Length: 415
Image (cartoon, rainbow, N blue to C red; front, side, top):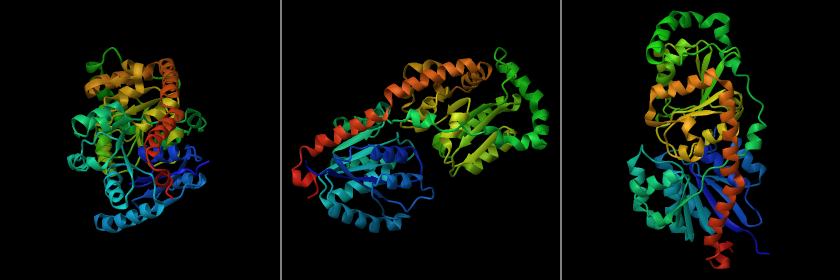
């Protein structure tokens, strides 16, 4: 039997994020009799090591180029070229913009026969990313888009050649997520029960209820006999995730409904601004920014409702994880969301970022837990059927083999 084909996987960093988690899990599930993977990371060792540890457990070698800023790019580029010349992969598969761009340049210098770049998001924040991608598109053999929406954006806005675009969606492991022990979310709010926040709740409750009556006379919250109702949102604290919009939208409900709670999981540069919004809206008693958590899936497992407020996306991993956990969701329109929800869009997708509709959807779940449980079961079946790892791994392996089979054997095997 021939030895496995060598493939280098290049990524910007290995901090815990959607693209990073997907790449690591993909590699750990590859047929190692067919593929010999090596991971190269542009950045330094990550602060949170769980993805590095996962690769170590699967005996997949990882090299860190330790590029810390723009001044380190030339040295990082030289290291990458040296790796490619020594390892001699048949394919360079990259993920995320910086790895995509630097990787295709290095592959050209090192003589790597095939370059495949992963497009994980509809890039609406940095137009120059699209310009550079378009300028160097001839050096890329294939782009793998994470959703049909991203492929459409890449063709129409990014102006990449449609013939080079392939769609392979994200995947989740339903059994692994459901095996997580749910976190006791009540502990995050214990200070209120000790007397820290009740004064503010009481002082604003009448004012907020009046506002709700004027806007939603038919859907006023009814106190739940099951205790607190926990909503969870997950993502880096960046403008893209729309957490500022989420806080402002939910503020009337959080002020007027004593046992409605919001937990936002993630760290990032928007933290201080979000804290100022929380203080301004008077909802400190009902919101927790818990930062980065290794147990994010366990937090999702414990919640009553998952929320997605992103301005743009690719295919939200956190949404897939929430659905895999059997949770109902309320989402705004963003790339990949319709594809994930499929026939369940009508009950869980809010169009045009309509704040009133978003609040009404939440109140419906708050008042009817059985309705949420039914939707959660349907969500779980949806991801089990359409976003499983068997399908994703098979699609990637088939794509790589279509290029490797066209190469001379000695090149494909790195010999």
